[in-house]
Image (cartoon, rainbow over all chains, first blue to last red; front, side):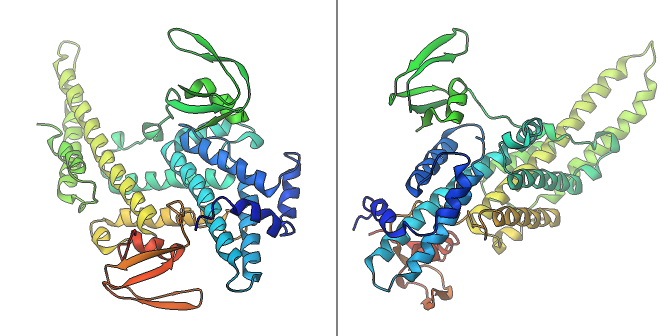
Length: 231
Length: 191
C-alpha cells in the first residue's frame, strides 16, 4: 500500500484541532500564518538547502521546535485512535517521515559545525544575537568539540614535547567551506541579475521555476532569503 | 633520517579505515626524536657567531623536522578521533570491545566527553529532546523484515517482546530495529 500521497490530505482533516495552535502562535510574529502543511514545506526546503549548501545556513530553531511539537501532538492523537484504525498506520508513517527530515537536517548541521567549528565560531562572534547562524546549543556543541580536541592533543602529545614547540593553535585545524562549489538550484521567482565573479565577470538572470547549475557563492544570499531553492 | 617514524604513523592511517591499536611504541619514538632535536638545537644555537653562520642551516633543518614530527603526531590523533566520532554516530554510545581495546585512555576520555556534549545538544531540541541519531534512512514502511545474524536476547517494545535468536526471521517496527541493524545483530531482508 502506498500511503505517501494521501497522507497529507488526511493530516489536516484529522488534526485540525490537534493543538498546533501554540506552536503556530509562536510563529506568527515571524510570518503571517503557518499551517502545518506550510511548515512542513518550509522544513523540507530548509533541509534540502542545508543538505546541498557547502556552508552552514542560518538556523531555523523556531521551525524545528514547531515541528517537534507537532510530532508530539500527532503521536498523542494517534494514541487516542482505537486499535486497528487504518489511520494509525498512515499517521505513524507520516510521523516517521517528519522525524527523519528533522533528524537528517540537524545531523547535517552538526556535521558542518564539527568540520568548520573554528571558522563558524569566529563568524558568529561578529554577528548580533539575532543574526547568528548557530543556535545557542549548537555554538555550545562547537565549543565543547574544540575543547575536547585540545584536551586530547594536550594529554597525548603536546605535554610531552619541549615547551617551545608545545603550543597549538586551533587555527591550524580551521577549515572554511568551499563557496566556489557548484550547486543545482531552482529559482522560486524571477531574479533579474546574478553576478558571477571570476576572471570573466558574468551576469545571468533566472526565470521563475528554471533550474541551473551555478557557483554557490553567486547565489548564497538568494538561498538565504528563499528566492532560490537548492536541489 | 628525520621523521621516518612520524611518516610511519600517517601511513598506518592510510592502510585501513578501521581504528587500529594505538601505536604507542612509534608514537613515543617520535616524541623522543622531537626531544633530541630540540636539545641539539639548544646546544648549537650558542655556537653561531658572526663569522660562523653555518650552524644556522642545521638549526633550520632540525626545526622543520621538529614541526613536521609534531604535525604528523597530531594528524594521527586527529584522524583516529574522527573515526571514533564516526563510530559514535553509526554504532551508538557504547563502543564495541573490538574498538575500545584499541584505544588509549585519553581517547576513551575524549569519547566520553563527546558523548556528553552530544547528549546535551540533543536534549535541547524541542521540549523533551530528540535523538537525531535515529532515523538514518528515510522510512519506507513501518515494519521491516529482518533476519537475526547474532544472538541478541529478548527485545521489548510497546508492551510486546520478542526473542531474537540467531537465524530467525521477524517482522519488526523499523524504529525498534534500526540501531540493532547498525550494531550487526539484525540484517534487513529486502523482499
